[in-house]
Length: 223
Length: 185
Image: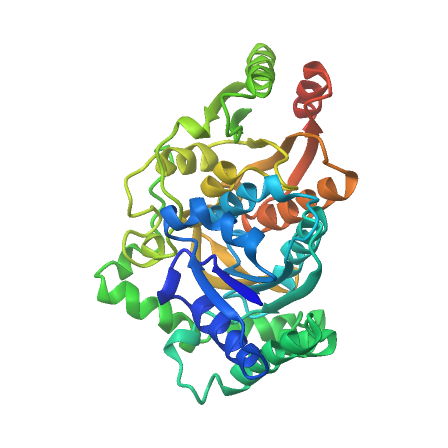
């Protein structure tokens, strides 16, 4: 049994995607002991040959952060390298993980549909997509603050090992909040203005000495 | 109108796609528009690394001095931007997606609520963000569902860019028809 993990995060090993994928793999390994290979797609050399591991695998897990409402450009480059395997018999089962910084999962549902179609295009069994928002802070938060999320990912990993697919109910439950009810929009708006959220950006802007320039518009032609 | 065509054709091996856009550019210029056609594969830029310097170190610009600056400049100074690509594995080309990722500096890190959802705040005047359009080449294996998926993702991208996808056209349509649709925007 060969399991290949593709980390499609441009931040590679230092990003949030790596942490989330690791929790899924831990869950998988609590049930079964596959030969596991990790491939970091942000490394251009690895990216160019990463498709070779695809055809040798029984299961692949591709994770990435949501970039401009879809997969990062470098993940698209990798997907294009899979074109020769489209429709082939014996392709591995495909599982996906899409995480984003937006609080709601809704933003990632559009690319999720693409991923399901991609598995179909490759004639690969589709195990499902883990979708989770609000992940920008994961790498900076304590194990305790991430506990619920990590447990959910662990269970999904175990679930994947047992059933060859993610449990739908568990996927939906982990993805919450999916979208805030419209009636709460004013409260939501206020919440996003809370100093605690802007502090994350403001502290970095100040540290870099560019807080006053934070609204800069460098590309606007002078009127 | 000021129009920018972002040619996301990855390969020299598909000259028909480039020719189509060249003819479209000529037609749009003849119709009185100021139209720029950027062949993205000839521009120098690496993939977005997710460093967020464009938000917290060099506000509004990618910290890497590459051609993404020119693409961002063209974008925010246009009235209409045509995202053009052959459909490859069911989506826009990697080279086009690379430059779309690099449009992040056009937004601000702060979030706000749009249509009941969290979205990044505008950096420029909301009226400065151009209308978007899609120009797709249906390659073998492209079906209606692929087009629908591309359009649904593009609608999200344009919503994040404080605008909307105003039209979707295909390279099997006559150039005049496409130019007319753009003239009528």
